[in-house]
Length: 515
Image 1 (cartoon, helix red, strand yellow):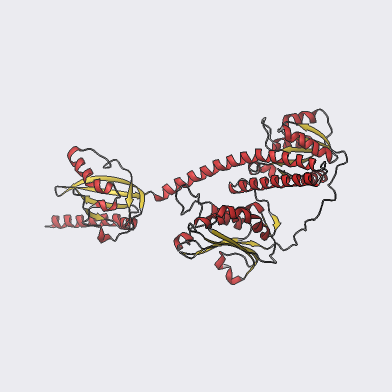
Image 2: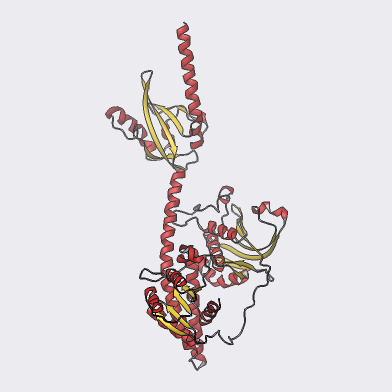
């Protein structure tokens, strides 16, 4: 009797131990009999599939499976029992599960069998793969965006070279024109080339190939400047309107990021209004008080400029709204969205010392607001009217390094017209050869991206070591190398961004020589 009591006590202890393991297990554990009916289940399974524990026992396990596995499951067990052919048992594989709400999710299923009371049972351990699959998808999206960014950056580099040639030759030709019609045609061509430059800058901003280059700006001008393009993008079914503060404060931000944010928000709003609707872009001066700080994620009290984009679309439920700024989170179908647009806007706002917030209700639309710090110092006034003159040289010698033949020829002409003596070089090695020959040079003006194994940064570094008295001015139409060559970027070398006008070239060269 004592032995029997000891045995019963041991069995009870083992049962409690097994129950404790089942209840504490992170993965779902389900046991079925040889007919496919569930006999035991742990709490993790209830959480994973969305059922109560009592809803499992006695039901055929195939109710947790989508088709075709739902209909074919009992056949799998029968085939195994009669032929011994294994599909999952003792092997494990990735399969798809079905939750109570009908949603499907990836999971890894490992199954083992055991005998008890002359019956065969199967225990399945289920590991949810949703998080790992999401990580894999995010990595693929990141790789895709990286490849897209490299492609865009390469195209932009070549395109900006072409635009620089077009702008430069048009400007030089403009001075030779004699009739109003000729000057009007030249002006239209210059404006078209500058539009191409702005479009290229937006491409670089979208693909995250541009460094932040903050300027003092008025957001109203960006909204007005993008209106025509947004009308074409949004289509005829969406009514676009602006509500712009008449005395809007200035803010210091990267203009390309502002444009990117407005366009991204407008496109998101368009996608949320498949049947049409209204899109309103609003600017306002906003004073954040101390009691508002918590509502705006700890944004420091003070003066801000608020840019808001509102739509009358489908809106977001709370669980979507709370994750909207997460990188790679998107509710759009696969292939329709990267999930990076809002996260880039959030990052841009935070990096600029501000904040971004979303207000949305299902069926009542969405408003995304960006808070940017007010710039307290007065914005520099731009000179209006015709230019009265450009900073000119007095015979200083400029070593101009450019691998593009047409652009190099144009650069020589433009610098000569400004009063400089120019030594042209097609590569960094040729430039070093000119310097080593004893030629006197006051300024090195070099492109950054060049073939031949010697970039503009590397050339500048060598020149600084060998000829420390030579001033340096860089130029580029491709932004990625600015981030890649961080040691040189830390030296704060002046960079003239392609394409540039004659006035910008004159000012940059004059400024570099004075440093």
